[in-house]
Image (cartoon, rainbow, N blue to C red; front, top):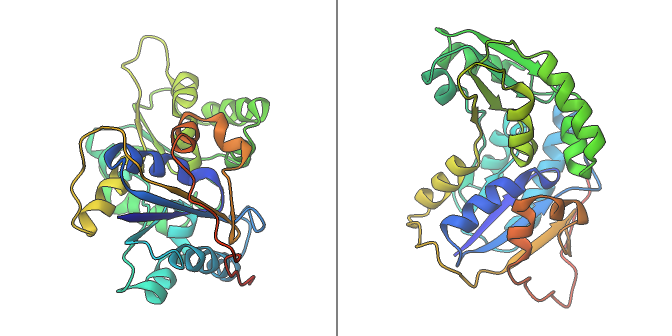
Length: 272
């Protein structure tokens, strides 16, 4: 069994680690685009072109399913990805966890990139699933970039700024960018208010990992050591995980697995 994940950068680590915990035996393909990131400031057309190239690099490895482990790509490029790859390759998108957060009661804060905050897609989710609770959209400029570089000082500044924009009475925070799940506990510590109930954080990694396995009819295996290989594609080039990925527990978990031997010929890559 082979499961591919794609993102502009290392935001895919959280979902990849979730898959690894469920199925240690699965081969993983991590396809990202360091040459083209960040995707957020790009036009929808440019972003879709980059996402298609990243997805096709992953598809060339013949996975059983592809997880789009990126909220921005899911918002803007998911229909194009499915049109290009399905039904031969099932494509699983990543949706901000507004629905479960609202079901737990409000007030809710949705932390997301500026490209996702206020988008018709996110506003639609809030209208459909959280109409009965108070929801505050919190843009987090610079946070995904800081996580991508594992820049501790920049992460601290961006988290503190977003925490200032988060209502004091928030009971839940939706992590609306997959990068944010890599620093979930730092976010919790910044937003948790003294004397209030524990803050609930809602991410997507576990949910998309479960959905990917269901889509291909695979059951979770016992949590025992496995032999699954790891293939890392950086803008189509087969490489090792970037150093910043190893700053996070999810990256270290994945790096502990064997890398697939590199092919003799480079992976084809078309640059939009």
